[in-house]
Structures are given as C-alpha cells and as structure tokens.
Length: 342
Ligand SMILES: *Cc1c(COP(=O)(O)O)cnc(C)c1O
Image (cartoon, rainbow, N blue to C red; front, side, top):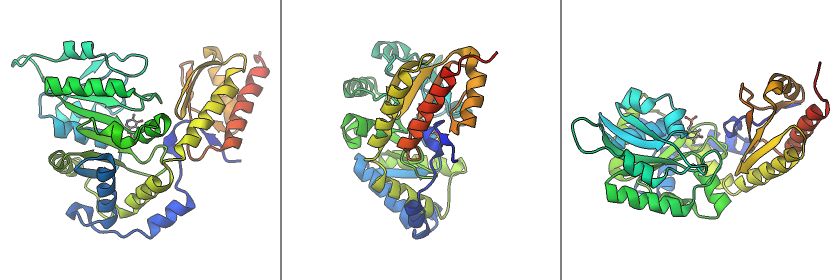
C-alpha cells in the first residue's frame, strides 16, 4: 500500500504525461541562454504575469535570495514577516550570502504585516543604520490568501517610501485559484515575484523569478555566482511548462479535498480543527499522544510531519486522491476511538 503523504505539496512525483514531456524536450546550454525549453518557460511566465523578464532557477529559496540580492546592495535590509519563509526557512541566506540584513515584522493572523509597524521599522538615512530597501510579502502564507486590499495598500506604501516590493509567491497559483483573482492581477502590484513549480503544480524541480529586465539581469548574474547556472535544464523546464498547462485549474481539487479532510477530522473527539486554508489543514492534538499517533499513522499508511508541537499541518496535492483523504480520516478516527494505551 502506497502511503498517503500529507507532509507537504513538495512530495509530488511527475505524472507519466509530465515525464513524456520531459523526455521530448528540446534542450541547449542555458548559461549561454540557448535552452529553448527554458527560454519558452521564462517568456511565458513573464508574459502571463505581466513582467519584462523571468529566470528559471532550481528552488524557491534561491529565487527569493536572488530577488533580494537584485533589489539590495551589501549593508541594505529587507522588511519581512517574522514567520515568513524568506526570513525563517531559508537558512538566513540573504544575510549569509547577500550581506543583506532582515528586519522581521510580527504578522497579523492573516499573514499581513501591519503598515504602521512597517513605517516604524524603516530606518532613517544615516550611517548608523542599514538601508531599508525592500518589503517582502508571502502569498499564500500558511495556506492563507492575502487580501487584495492589503496588497494594494502595501504597494502604495512601498511607492511612497521608495521601497522595492517582492512577493514570495511559492503558492501564487493556489491563491489565484482559491480567490478567483487571476495570478497576473495579484502579481502586477509587485516589482518581483517568485513562483514555485515544484509545490502543488507538481513539477519535480524549479521556481521562476519574474521582474524587470534589469532586475532579472542582476538575478541571472547572482544565480551564476551562487552556482545555479545550469546547462540543459530544458527537461526540467518542460516539466514546469507541462505543470502550468495542466495542473493550475486542478489546484481547486486540492482545496476541496483539504476542506473534506478538515470536515472529517473536525468531528473526531481529541482533535481540534484550527483551520483550513487552500490546500492546508491545521489541527491540534494532545501533546502527550504525539509519539503514539506518529506510530499509528505510519502503520496505517499515512505520513504527516509530527514533531514535538501539538499543532499539525496536513497538505493536499496532486498525489492525494479522495481515497487518500478517506484513509487519513479513518486512521485518525481509529486512533482516537482506541483510547489511551496503558
Ligand atoms: C517551499 C517554499 C519556498 C521555496 O522552497 P524551496 O524548497 O527552496 O523550493 C519559498 N517560500 C514558501 C512560502 C515556500 O512554501
């Protein structure tokens, strides 16, 4: 029995049709700018999201790093959510590799960074201080879709204050599909946007950074410096293009399955449903039963990340079907019906 893997939407494997598209891809040397499949992917996403240029890179972490390094110089800083991926989950890369200091801002429950806190965090122009240069947002954040009103207000704020405006849009298409607002309409407010193809879209590898031609030129240089100048990457780009053609609209299925999963879990005594947002479900379980639950779920063929915290995140994706959702709910139900082992 194949385990149902709800740890993340990164765990998807390429479908047979995607693999076929990869095998047939035209390739060239991308460091020379000669890979037709990479160029087609970059052109297409730049056009679709309304930007001059795009850059295909191995990971979202590198995409965000290159964006920050393109926006900033050594000794600059970026404003970022204290719980944002770009601050918390990227190894401090902007500081380590870019000499760019983060200024983390506590986020509201919807992931937004209050504008008054941002205004208070901007440093005066003075040799004592790092130069505040860019605001980085994340959408979706923990599955939550950021409101367009907030995005517009934050954009106006960055314009008034002369800041660059970056979006970690790892799950931009989840936000678009869930809200009905086209990805282009979300993206157009930003100066740069990073999109992951390897999350819910189901490509094996890759992210794309979009921005102005000048910003992308800088990012391309830093990609090479970071060791990310790849060669016949066209086979990966073909998978990404296939994902954009075939796997965007179906994100709605992941969201619907997450809702079904949330509903199924919510009436199991012992589980507290914290919320369901796009393809993510958050629950609390008793902290003293985490180890036991971990063993039980593994035996039932359900994989989720269980550490030492009572809050668990379950993520639906391309490789989770209705049967997988049903099996997951049944496994949780059996565990909590079983009571406490002595
Ligand atoms: C996954 C993710 C990234 C990038 O992660 P990689 O594993 O480096 O591709 C960036 N931001 C968010 C919000 C993510 O979920």
